[in-house]
Image (cartoon, rainbow, N blue to C red; front, side, top):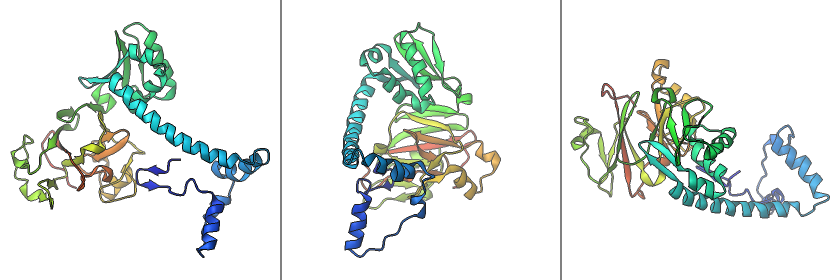
Length: 327
């Protein structure tokens, strides 16, 4: 369980309960506790109330050791992420919307399974498929492995493993590899570009007519905020490419702009009174398994522009009829 997960903070995670009880007593604070914390029906409570006390008898210092290990694991995570970024720069190469992985570098790395897992999990490959994909490193050109949904394929093509969508319609996923791009998908297309300060949206290539009334000047800056729901203005520093453009699915959630609590997209669409026939045509933009924009409806709070934003990615959605959706 991390101390920080998006907007969820757990500042007391490494402090023992007894220390908190002592502090509350010393400062005359009323102690309030969820009654379910005492129920051993939950695995975490069973470990806390049954297993840990039993382990303390032969190993009195087990709590201290666990806390020390947690600190080491946190530092190990930092090393892991830094090492992963190093390998990503050398191994991961996106060409024509397809991820290319060097077979030779994977073989030499000594950690091929871990690197393949990090590379392929955004494409729907599970742990079981990773071991099958790893076999492709020793296979002949033309060998392949599909993900369980049958939407993406890893193909051994000479010196590379190439990740490709089997069909844009079938996969419902489009890979966006760079900032300046125009991306076609079944519902229309997205235009991505960096937004310059003071840019007049009516002069852009978007084809949107007379939207100046929907443009709001940001105080203290030359940036124009676009109120049109077919536009998304995003903090580029918060995004990690490649981005994925895909259909929304049950279980998806995001933090709607203006909210600091997550909300399931299904619930959001119900609240917006979106009909069943419309839901079938709604897509999301995703960065590292986090939804950035429910396209045509609402961006995610985590990716909004702020006074600290240095670079803004402007994304414009145009459906096939060039019609605007209601917010």
